[in-house]
Amino acid sequence: MSDLQSTDLLALSPVIPVVVVESVDQAVPVARALAEGGVPVVELTLRTPVALDAIRAIAEEVPEVVIGAGTVTTPVLAKEAATAGAKFLVSPGATPTLLGAMRDTGLPFLPGTATVSEAIAVLETGHTAMKFFPAEASGGVKYLGSLPSVLPDARFCPTGGISLATAPSYLELRNVGCVGGSWLTPADALASGDWDRVTALAAATAALR
Image (cartoon, rainbow, N blue to C red; front, side, top):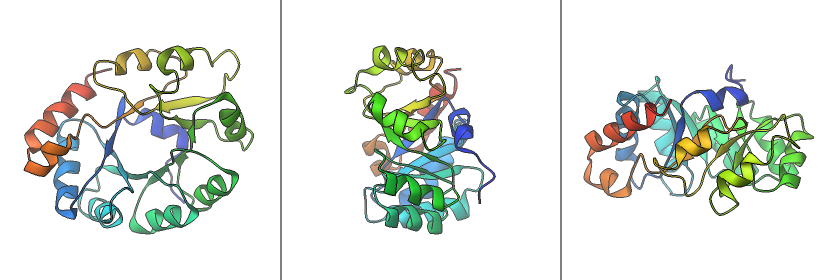
């Protein structure tokens, strides 16, 4: 079982980069570029065929980065991500089956929620740290800001449609520990190997607080 706790994930960095790689060759360089910019965590999404191999490569070659698996949608993916070396799991939604499977891996995890009922269902399992997705489409800052009065124990990592410009308004909320963002690793930067650009974006992000 990991020594890292789910609530710890919300304090690793102001922003958890949500990364999609199309080639395993991109994995280690992008992780190193983010770390150089002061962002020590990566959520690598399981949206491409190479994702599990990419997680494995980062876990083995960039140990200073806390590598996690995103877009975990099935118990099988949860288990495969853990086997590949992921240190945490993130799901876009949460069913009882998926919650159980993520817990069974022994890894910390952020289950996805978008409504009060979904957040309550997660809280009923004793789990307080969760993802809020898709953040902007689901009500954004105004919605999340209304939740502490009714769900004081819930803590969120909002993800989806957030940018460097809008991230600070989320981070000001008392129930938000960090945000998830894809702007740190633009597809064109990864495709061209522009790691200096990734490092610069990470540095700007790390300075948010």
